[in-house]
Image (tube, one colour):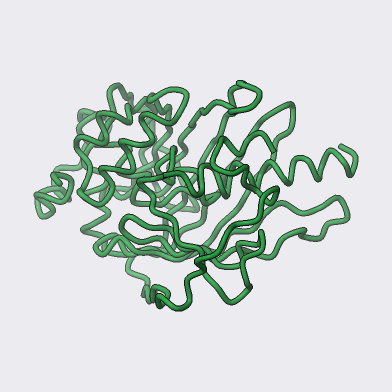
Amino acid sequence: MDRRQHRRAGRTVVAVGIMIGLGAGATGCSGLGAAAEGVSGAGGDPVVTLHRAADILRVAGTSKATTSMEMATGGTRVTIRGKGVYDYRHLIGRLTVVLPEDPAGTSEHRPITELLAPGALFMKNRGAGVPADKWVRVETASLSDGNLVTGGATDPYAAAEVLRGTRTASYVGETEVAGTPVRHYRGTADLTSAASSASADNKAALRAAAKGFATAEVPFDAYLDEQGRIRKLRQRFSFVNGREKTAVAVASTTLLYDFGAPVDVRLPRPQDIYAGRIAEGEGRNGGGNPAAH
């Protein structure tokens, strides 16, 4: 790939992975004590096991997380990576998201700090004319993807809540993730069904995603430890490039580890949030589908 192609790919990453739809206009928490009991193994019902996965994360409390988001479009494949911490009881987290390097091996963009909170995504080092000391705030329910791919990383708890919509699943077998024994499940979840069963904080966002993606079906591979906690979750989303009307495939992988890790996330003060206009041509196309960039 020459420099021109790579820069085009980089702009696509920013447009699609980071800013898709920016500026566009609970039963899940019940029974937490029972959720951690009777985790299904090879002999249990995989669908029931996966429906409980989000509840078991609430029991776990907190963890560290790493994320990877791969996007394929126009013959180009790019990857955005993130790393941080998440509190599943308060649904708040912090990720540092790193965009792909340029051909010389240096980053064209500063790492983006993202704060995940109920109903909102905060981003710092957003670029596009936003002052370096300011945050951009986005209402997740206003995003066409419900913030499953917008930030270049899927909110760990939202990813788990997608599993509430599991329609079909099979037990693949035992394996390991980062040295931890896990049970591997493969299946398909439906975003509309997930939204109906999700916690109040994610219901609207998942409902938006069900309407905004090319299909509401989400194929996945989930790896659960002996306590039923998600250790690895790979989900595949598809949406339509608004200008060229072509399908864009996005694969989101989330790794969860070090459960019980301390999480101290402080949301920005109102005066620290940018209220100005996001520059055109910097990963946004004025409200249409940013994949066109």
